[in-house]
Length: 405
Length: 232
Picture (cartoon, each protein chain N blue to C red):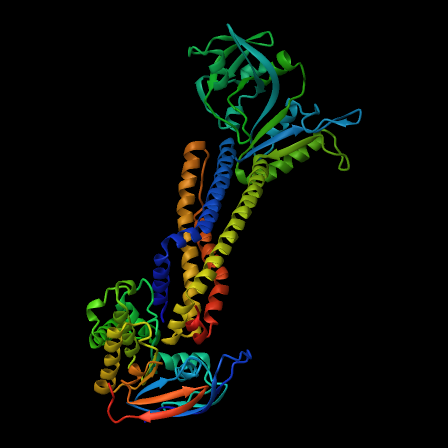
């Protein structure tokens, strides 16, 4: 008997027992739907993290001060006060570096009229908006002159604008008090939203880094140096050059540990997405287990079906069906059952994914290869778990099958 | 030509159950065109004999030649192929597939014999017409009477132009009227179409339609009568 005939025979047998076929498929349907939703959530999350990293600029490199040890307690990265604006200027002269900006971060209560708001005030260089690819919403940004003369001007992030000027009036030209020092607002930043780690990036006030050091932090060191490589392909080279330059400037001889860290955002992104990938694999593993449980369900029903249809098998053998043909018939039945379950599971998974995306506003992405994979694996589950019952049917002796009560 | 030649056929059941009687040295020849009724009380070995002749079961010892070739020690697949091409079966309980139309049931043996679809339908309808059930082609088995179902089963046994039709208590589940119809159909197939028929029954009035009656007891043939004219 040909492929087409066997397939039609299997479909007929399954349609004859519609309710039972559907119930049998349920395990596979749930398993595949779980795989699809899980993978969609994981891939969507990874994609959005990657998109945010990309929006930060894939050629961005961050230098953080190293850790210090005080009375045996190490402070962790960023604890030491080793980076200076002069380090930044030296780095800016390196060949593949497009721009450098120091960051001097101070948490402060910012007051404007009757409103006040605690936020992070960051002292930066005029290149900062270029490095972060962060356009202004209004006004102007910090200039070289502002840095040279440590002007008392500031640029507000959108969250700060909303909280200090809730009436919607333009903040340009207004004065905000930071740590008792009046700063004039010259510009506002366009909204950037949450960072990949869930931080509100718009909750910030930018001032010239000289102003921040002299008037707010009172320190001669900076919290970080943000570097933009001239091209994404030069990131690794710039990282090495920066490391060598700072070791030289800080007079660090090889056995001594560096008093700074050089990180690029790709590394951070990779760390974030690898955590996501582990979760994804765990969830996919759970989903795979449910697929196997679904397969065992199919095996059960196929066993029942073989027993129930023993006389039918006997008759088919009596009128000339070889054992092989009977084997194929039952194997095809369980494969069709599992594949149909897989397809229905994909449909349920897609619907579920859309629901989650709609209700939870979670970014979703369904890689087509997973759809193909889950349908393929359902079919394999069908063949694997259908083999034993089918083998049992084919091995029946026609006379025993015919006499079966 | 001899369709069936069995010599000293024995069948022992290894379970050691006293009430299961096999065959104890059966020798018989059935010629082409014969209409043979095998009679005997239950447990006489008549069904075992039919199952062996139908290649559904194997003898413990003895020889069996079907259409002149030895089929005593064929593989399961080879036996299936002979059943597919050269044998037709009719059972007491009709054994039609449930939720399947009469036409599909009649076509079934041809599916396994690899007959093309349009040809299958043509032959099936031809045989259904021959046994008088062509009007039931789209009926499922639960929409037909016992007599109609058995006629469909007979049409199914005819589609591969078998050398031998084996009927195991074909009237066992039918009322008197339907029994008479079915037996007259067998007689007609034998007389007008030259079909070779082996029928197993324990009812004398069913056996009366046959031209030859072989009686079994305790696994042996105790009588073998031929009649010039059928009695019924």
